[in-house]
Image 1 (cartoon, rainbow, N blue to C red):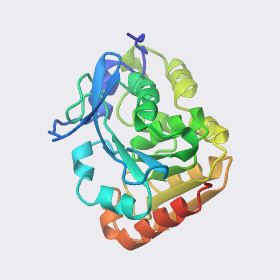
Image 2: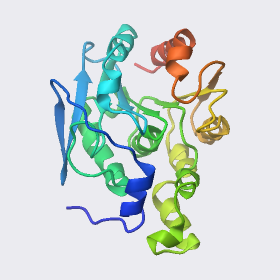
Image 3: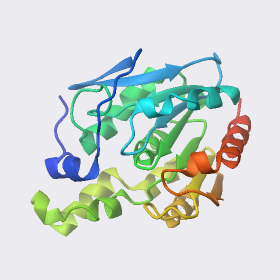
Length: 253
């Protein structure tokens, strides 16, 4: 069992930052992640095609993405692997941020696609894990939708470091070691698509601008005019799908 991170895996971080719920999957892909089993879903209609490794948002589960989204991705000539988090859906364990970062390696392996055909896709809190994947492997591309620029900022909205038994300086140092999106995106040399709703009042669009500016490779920023944090896809379906399809079509190979 991996050693607990005293800050990121603290029970208060788990309780205040994550909002898991249970949900049944008819045919889950089970991924062993040490002390947890992750119940994911896979759709592979295009052997050899690019694979989206999709990390969903905080209050969501894999089952929320089963209606329509796999077919949409398939129509773009891509495969889809819907990653689940520990403690969410049918997965075992508890949503501990440090261990969830470690789970990314198991999920990348479970996709069954070489890194050069893999496209991590992070929605909202899922951007944390998509960026982790893009920093660690030479992936084909990266998609960030309603993403978080600085996880430390988001954590500080919900807790005080003193509640974790650490100082503000120690908390900042811990986040810098494992959650520095600017440094991670500097290691990603491939293309990046950043999608965000202009009226997102939960994760403001300044997050998208920062993420796009930090990428080492070419970045396309698309601020969509309708919807908010949780309706960006449904309210901008044509523009959203068009941007994603064009991005996938331009990937090398």
